[in-house]
Length: 424
Image 1 (spheres, one colour):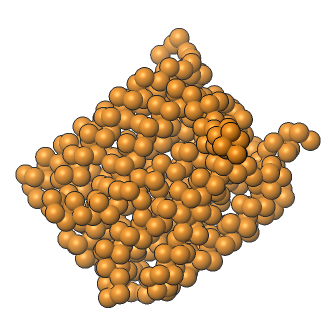
Image 2 (cartoon, rainbow, N blue to C red; image 1 turned 60 degrees about the horizontal axis):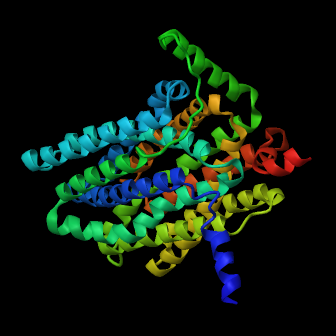
Image 3 (tube, rainbow, N blue to C red; image 1 turned 180 degrees about the vertical axis):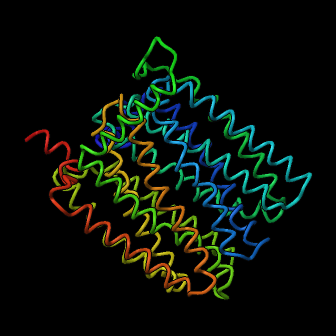
């Protein structure tokens, strides 16, 4: 039995065709960054709401962090497609670390200044948007095509894995030592990520030009990305659907307000719920890593997940704490699997030379929906029960599924079930 078990575990969990030197370095490095990000932003939410007691100001801080996703991909996407993405990522990580250290120093000197954290959110949001497009460009080029689903599954569990381990500790560290300690910690962890990923050795494919990259060429490349969206119904429909998903995420702004004002909850339970929510995503990522979903079932599973997710999330803020925890585990499992299916399908669908631009445009579409949704929900949170807003935005999610995912003419099924379609 033992002789059979070890090869089975190696095949399932330690697939050497996936866990190459490059992928291992990238994964461990990103895990360090994820740990720092979880610690800082979990505490920052609590910190800002505790100082302001205003759902709109809390929402505004998040929106300012998301706002660069509306503009930056217009600059970043074509630029990434014409430069070595790993070199760009390393420079970007260094800049992020510097920002964290500078913000820590400013906090010590100035204390709580809301404008300071707005500036911090905007700058880190800009650099994070750059990082995300670079990561989406690098991963498909250091992972074999047949291992792309597994590779994305591993990437999808890094943040939830970090959240489970770090969130309660982060809230404790914040309450005892202040937010400055977490800024410094995130800066150090980001430098560790940069050091590890600097050892990646791979030949990256991108549009290499001898001439200087001009603004005119940039606009031409960007126009090509828009034309691609116009002629590809599957990618266009996915972008519009992701916009409705971004609208539904606006209720996350209300979580800390709900937990801070309901007598049966509180910030300690808020930290616990964040960890439990992440545990669901971790479990979902592991399931997707171990169990291979049949090619012809990806689309059907994704559609079922969309309807179940919107229904449960819509009633989330009406639940008692125990049911909240159970619901977040279920939604985490479902969300991780649907995100993996969606991301793997899109990256498989795109060519290396266009990937940066399309990933950037996807980010823009989602942000254009998320920014006003968060501001509106944050403002309405002053007048309406939080649970009613949660239901309203999830109705938008359901409408997006009906109008963009289900119609056959949008060819979402073909993109999701990509192996089956190619075999046919």
